[in-house]
Image 1 (cartoon, rainbow, N blue to C red):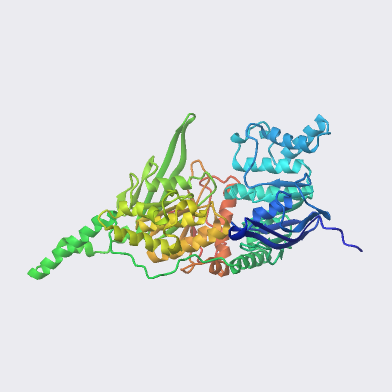
Image 2: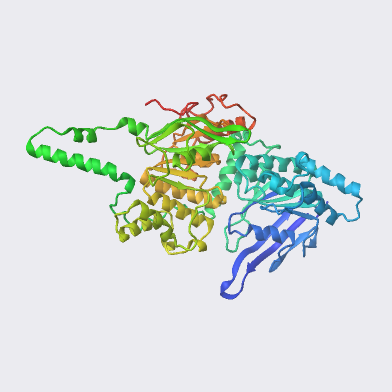
Length: 604
């Protein structure tokens, strides 16, 4: 029996841009065969040529060598047989949901009757769950809803192949998970052939029949493929207990690491930190020095040690155990409909040197908590104390790393870091400040890019500068607000390793807001889970008893890792389904080390 012609084939496809010394080799000898009705996920990272690959399949880019075949015929231009959904929504802002989809339908089916077109548009609007929003314009829609419009528009053209170019990467974790489930449901219902470009291993595993990594460029090509023989539908939480899912997840992650993922921890090139005291520690140092002077004078005179020395020498256990205190913190915003309580009684103690991950669904108040302790947002009720002093406003004793690093593009990496050093070390010499900046830039792997302007850097490099700048401030408290949320998985993994390496050296007290379960567990001593807003508060606290220093490879290999992951996933799933703020209770599914409680406060 003759095997049917594949619906899609790529044969020895290569593509470069530029010429001469400026040539960039993007794809090299890419070969791929896809059967009709198959769902194939290609794991591509920034700079690996994934957009060029999907554009070549779509007919938007012509390969230099090789060919793309659709049912055995060469692809030379875009066509309605291939529906493309981009990472950005690409909607007409002046048209409604109905209007955006109708525009595509009218183009592809010009001879259809008005009734037939309307029926087609209505069918696919309903398929993506947007019937209630058919007359809204894109500006009135959330990011997830806009992406649903893009998918409905592509499906309404009745393509034989649906091409998805990272359609979920710009969305928060909850919306991403929900839309991923929608894509699987639509695929099952419509039986389209799907090619998905993604940078998320879990997303690929949950959706695809085959997962194929794209090697890191230049000259990227397809690596070893993984056949995903897992029963459908695939449940995100249930997969945490599936031995085959975990095996595949570990193998694919290891494959990506073996393809050249750098640990990004920065080489120790012999640089040393100068002995300069940050302005926010100067008063503490002055007290200790004054007490020491009194002690030396007393000893010389033969008198007993003065009271000041005794106070300075006494272990401050309470301050160590309650270095950061959130005492029934509330944030209330006035609205036309009355007061809105976003955070309602956030209560937590942190030890000096502790690393906390703060996780929860979008809108639960994680970033609000972070901006309150940073002093960027006023506390409505309750109080926050750092090292014995109540927080009332922003200060150099707290360093914040945001999702976007907020660098001055015309300044170099070193100059951007020095801006903070000038504020924190006012009495240090210019050379000493430069030493501080260069030390931390080297620690984040930018020793060779110290004098490179921020405008010439990748997003990952800019975020490294942001991390270096934060550590260079020698803060009492490091605050990270989804610092890797805008980066692809490869860069995110690299920078998590960077952060862990530098944190291990400094042991600074830290809070990291994240929506990434693996990131939360990798970084933290405790994972603090917040209930959904409004009236959000701490729902559960998970103690992470994993050895440090940590790496992603070691995390995946640890026997307790998936039990910790289950604790967080089950909590997030519980609140996705509308659990009430006071409902959560500790579960017993984690290992003995994975202790949970529902009260953030520790016994002092």
